[in-house]
Length: 52
Image (cartoon, rainbow, N blue to C red; front, side):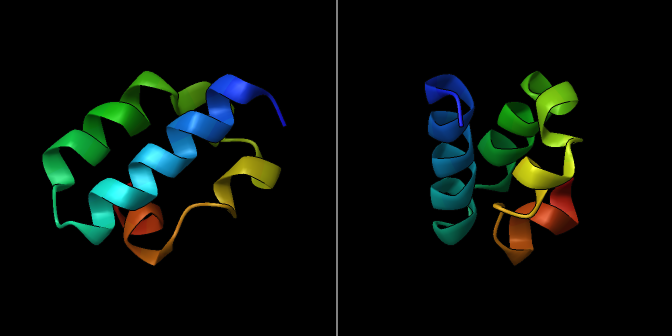
């Protein structure tokens, strides 16, 4: 997994855990193409998947 997408997924999951859904959504929209790949999508936590 590339370092950039790993960092983004970590940030999305952390933002969702902290209930900061606005920041999580911005990160998801920024990385939408990569997150649409199944191998990265499944790394999002449940809240991140709902926001996707």
